[in-house]
Image (cartoon, rainbow, N blue to C red; front, side):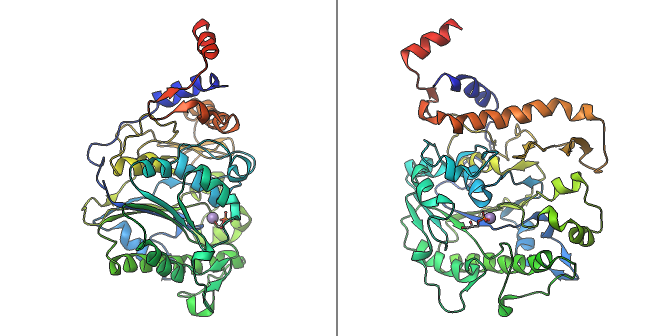
Length: 421
Ligand code: GP9
Ligand code: MN
């Protein structure tokens, strides 16, 4: 019942960092374009593979005057992969430990970012050139109050335009911007890319760099599809400019989850030139996060440790929307009060000083094992945080929360019971 929410609510309320004065409203009134960079991990950013640059366009963005780049940002997804990252983005809640929440709890009440933006006059949409029922998106998007879902049926997949899992990212970007140009402004459009997906196949003409040369075909091809994704992002920026949408939009991009699993550790060790310890495995969960605000001159590299749970408050504050009454577990990455504590869905965690993985406490600077006492104070809170989030989902507790007023919706009986306690 609603009283379960009392403890969670007081926990959430006591952990909300205030927005950063400088960044609050920095993109107010602009269109919001969020690009999900399929399977893109940070280990390819600003790096080469056999002398070839993997992500030239994104590398430029990390140094761009209008872009804030977060190199210490982690994915927090579980079995629901892309859909879990969407869940984190929209709700600032953790996905579930078992199964994809998009399948198991699509009928719940949520207070999504899309819903809030909708209430603030935004048209809300998702663009993804795959069948709409994949990950149960068609159902879940109704609960998330996403007005429009442009799935594969909104796209013309011409001959040679598909590879691997479906439509290629470059024609996807071109057609998506055409579709965007028809949307009422301001809009919030979320674009889900697809080409940089296991098993990372490409047509010959789209291979812009060579394969890598390890014993893992998967890793070898990954560099090529990541390179192709980079080209697709470049196309997106060019198309937005061509259609006159660029200046009045803020573009946020994030990697959804790892593309290279631990099954490829031997090949990965060859590439990285070091042994993959549990510490290194945790480092490999870093995914890129970019906030691009055209004409703002606010660009820099933000070293703050953060995760996907933080995306919603960060973005909403940029748009000038308060989130203090939201039932959310993340915090504004630009806030001075933001806590550097990222909990992975499997219980591993990262703080500003340590990485806790494989039941070992590591120093985050050196990657060396360190005194467990440094990690100890965070072990319980990490599990507690996951538990609280899980109880909201399992109990469908947002039914009992009025986010407009930040109040619990309790029956008289529940109120009376709580007063006695
Ligand atoms: C499918 C796409 C990829 O529509 O989102 O899903 P993934 O396998 O990465 O979760
Ligand atoms: Mn994915």
